[in-house]
Length: 279
Image (cartoon, rainbow, N blue to C red; front, side):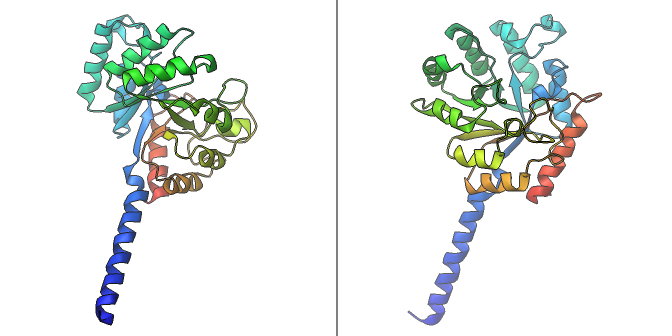
């Protein structure tokens, strides 16, 4: 084999390796969306309209959303299957994709079963929830029966069994239908560094709740616009790339701004795109 052939072979190998690495790490594969809870003062239809104005493709619903005047402003988890079907029709008309929904659940298996039924009607790919510790086995079984993953969400210390990544990992053991929805903005309230938490949760992360906070170790704080707080998002994104994460990144606001959170969501989208060099 001549030196020229060897050189060309080495060049092609390097090029293929680079393309493969880029395809595995491409953040463009991440599904950027918004949690409809961000617009929770509004009805389901109103939430969708605001989300659509943000120019996003994906939304995450929640089962305690108000259904709207036509359904007597009942919350979603109390609706009949026909009521959920009406909401599904409204969603379909928007062209938005709701591939996940937050489940409140309850104290009984039947409470959880009803909400899994709602998730099934919406054809979601996974549900987000904080299942009671004593119900891990039964809820994992329900997720398996309904053919969807349950992404365990975290709030902060004192309000959630999953405030620390180690407690989330404990829930994953022996429960093949459990995964993780890492809420980045809640972690610092408990003194948890989001990047270090993501490292611990590697291999289990289904989704991210994209949220920022102004300081560590203060559970009384409410979130701030992404990129204006203490979280090192370039490091977060770099870690997700390293893990070959390819799931949903869901923007969420807890603070309610007037008249809506739309502008802060748009600002977050711009920050996200700029930080990742997408636009």
